[in-house]
Length: 596
Image (cartoon, rainbow, N blue to C red; front, side, top):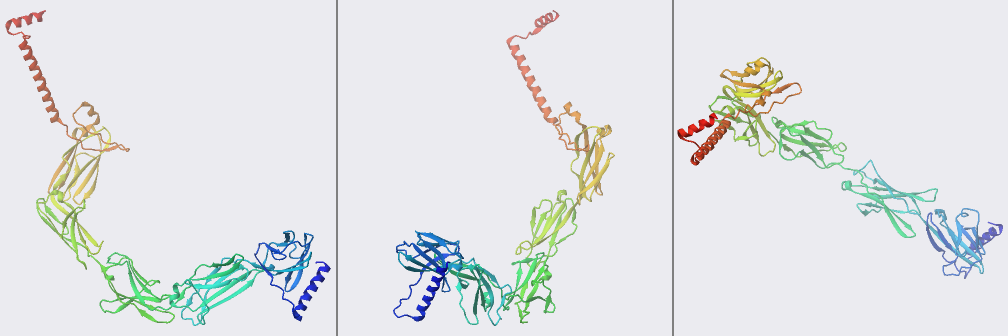
């Protein structure tokens, strides 16, 4: 600012002060400044007069008024503008033939009065009030992590709301469950403060304090920032938060998982619960059936007693006790009955049943339970249900009836509750072989496995008529499988191998005939598949079907009869036609022809 401008500004300020101090009668009050609104970082258009006034000023001076002190910031001479040194030097420009001053990159510090003085063609003065706005950032909210006790006598801090970098300071409103909160003595207190950043923007911090009750344990709190922009009024909301509320328990109860009917072997959890926060210290008691007294048990830290595999002994009356460690008040739950349903071990009599072939046998099944029990008998190897009831009877026993039988005792009212017992029925008799004779194709000098299976009671033993390495395997309590490893020799091909099964009641045999695979090409009338040869050079014998000799004989006889019939018919035809010679003359004619 030049010396003349500075002197003029000082005189102008002094004159204004004198006028206000003297209160000259009849002197009109200066008009209200024109209001111009802009956002931080934006641009403001400052017009030297109302928009409808003619704008043809050849000499204009612009001042910024801060704390009633005007400072020259821009000159206009004959439509040309020049900034004065200072904070506005790089942010001012002219528009509309010099009547509009453009202020860019607005900051909160620009909120003040700007004064325009025009001297030519006529004196004119116009004041502009610039209002600056900046929307705050999204509000953040921090809940009290320590929680609030309902026993507190004064309002405790619930949450803190922060709105940063707004201008001017926004207004904060607190909400609980969607309803705004107001100051309430000894109940609700809202304490707000603001900080001015170096940028001139404000950071608002608001603390909500309240005295809470048990019903506030699920309450949702949030804050709202209200602010203004040139476009109108706006608001921003924080996220919702809930604060942990501590309150004493009023009730204790007991829960059992899983719900419904329980059975032995189930994983059962007996849990104590309370309506207090934090929950009280729990103990679980079970009634002693002998003394009728409740005896304390040791639950886990979470107040639960876990029975990994419940047994019938766990049945009984249970009760929870909760001790509030702050008030030392003790609460008891209502007693609750725990019932573990069971089925005892199943007993079958006789335990080792046996009978002669053709005889009779009766099996009886027993079991105990706290519920109604149903019995059924199943064949072990097939799973077929043979009888419903506790008794299974056999009449005219056959050898095939020997083997395993299972009795199942189940409780229909408790799904999955059942027990079974397996018993083996022995039918007394001499050994029984799967076949009397078998034939297999072999190659000479190969090593193969011959198998022989027999069953009977008492359990038979097996021997072989040829030398080799034999191994026995139990098939069931009455059956045995013997596998003989042998080398195919001419002697073995000639005699075959005989398997002998014997017990105290008799003996039985199976004969295995061996034939060379090369014999197939001779047309023996049998149709078989050669045994599979394993990688180790051994093969396992297979049963071969008997030759179909009867069928072949029938076909041969039929063909012969047909040939004879055709031949007889031909002879008869030639005889009727006279083509065949008869009598002695004919015989002589034939002899002559023969001699020739």
